[in-house]
Length: 595
Image (cartoon, rainbow, N blue to C red; front, side, top):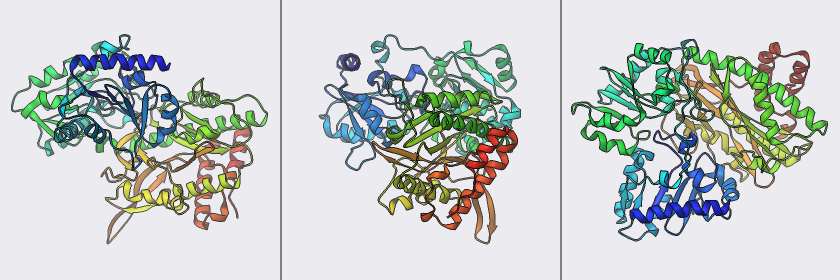
């Protein structure tokens, strides 16, 4: 495989040489600035063999580097060994950013080539600014991949379907009007939407173009005079076509977006998101472009009452599936029956599929046993799959997309008698989880202002984790959703009633085990005082934490009470949907913690 990767990089360098390009950047994204990609856009994965969902590649005439964040340092080191691609551990103080590395190492006059459709407007402007200061040139029409990847998969061709209003809770025409009203407030007469999840949400459309993400490969132009969906029309049957026409949306081929935008009247003012729209389109629109913030992101992030009710119902079905899955894991390990990490993923999928309204997983299940649990986004494969034994810890991060909601949960369980260190580590993580779950905060608070609550107990003992504490979650959409998050770096989006966010602090001891404890929480109103409105979180996820991993000696009475109250809620909501054996298992797993 290493020879294959090296041959692919050589073919890319041949194209670079022919075009006078000294370096090229291959980002892990698509023309929609997506995090999760269809196979057609998995260029960086094909070039390097690295399968992580994040990490950008820099190729120069004689070297190659992959910038990977902390979730993927271990995985990248393993997968890239011997390929000639060097891992740059992004996030460490000593690791330069990619652009700083380029500016410091390329001689003045060098050309950096990129595909301008794969860089947002803000990213493109940042590149140009830094490169010009270093005497370097940016070429934005360098797109050699079709010449290198001769068997590149075609764009996805899955059929589109309408997400029923009884689950979505709002009509497409009303959401289109709300988006256009936001665009108008930003000085635009029309809006151009690139983000696939936003398009799916606005139009109440879903598909299966991207693994585990029910989105549709398309662009959307919204205008009071008439809106246009740019899509491969073979994906749209007559019923969906009629639905769109009734909503004031016509169809044009996916590849005609630049031609269409370039032909708009000169007095049209089209809003483009600085972070979601491709920099190449800015040149196409010229004076017609209004660069601002997404007019749909906050609207999509704040769920309506129908969506929230749907998520609550989905959590019950998901909890039932989890009970049956973890019962089976426990039984098989205790009976010394062969069960591997991939077997755990299969169990979860089978039990979730047995429930009503299941569509697909919301991401590929992460089942990391022992040392694999320390690889934050570990993806078990036939080559890495290991058997579970009645010892050490198992970390399982999983979720599903149901027609009425999206779930995402991580549990860490002990397969044998946990060590004192494992119990202490787990409890320190849970103290952070509980602090977030119990937080009360004033209107306007952002996730970055709460993040320290999840970390402070770890920090006091010289421990930490480098990923975010929480991300937004879509509704029958992408499991990672902005604009809100809970993390050290500020995304500037206030936590607003109706938002669903994950709560997932962790701790990872390389070569030993990993711990992560994740529930989804809903921002709700708490109370109002003379100092204004205050908000809180409602925990939505329904499944117990492993009681054997708690060290009550380092827990406060309030923390113990939170665990007991949470487990009471889990038992009360799930028991009516369980058979007798499962109900007894859950009763044992939700017994009260005591000192």
